[in-house]
Image 1: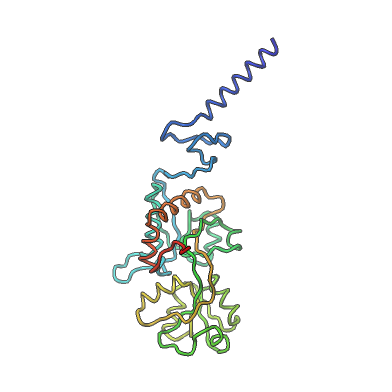
Image 2: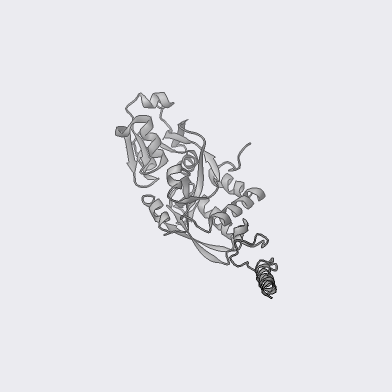
Length: 283
């Protein structure tokens, strides 16, 4: 009798387990079930959630970083790569993008505290930053460049800049600032609070050149035709990615949406529009 009771209990428990882990009908959300890889909708099974049910997603942008985000002077509207890609991602995930203007300084602390759902803003993926926040898959590879006025003739390569006494403009707390200090020393680096101010200073003659991401340099050159040019490249092989609060449940859905956009050509279409080149790797 004891063995029979044990057998009945075992069968009953297994029945409950199989029922709980049975594949959900099509379109039915799967409840949290880490031990049920059979459930196709279960996030623990490695399948990203692709329908956020209209959820509002706050997207941090600086609105001072063309071509990623800036205020168009003619229309007064906020435009750029970030806005087009953010809307395209939410269109695929059934979410509502809510763009929030945020200062660059303190952005990673704000992200780590969960003040925003995701930060766009052309953020370079670095080891130090990845210890504070989570990152999406990279969406473009780029290098840093030296941007000069169109009539500049003395700054032509790294040697000519390093051996001179010319000043380099940059933004505080960026990988550009780190590269600038390594290149010419801290005394010759002039750092500004926002990303557009070094270029404003360059155009007004307050600094001699600016170290900047190549993709951003293109944006500023387009906004100031015939006034700026790239003197030379400083670095290569860096990557931009989206930043999320630690352990965010949006990382996998956003990665899935970006993969879909790369696959159907949407990402390269937006990149061609704003960055003047595709984001897909050439090889």
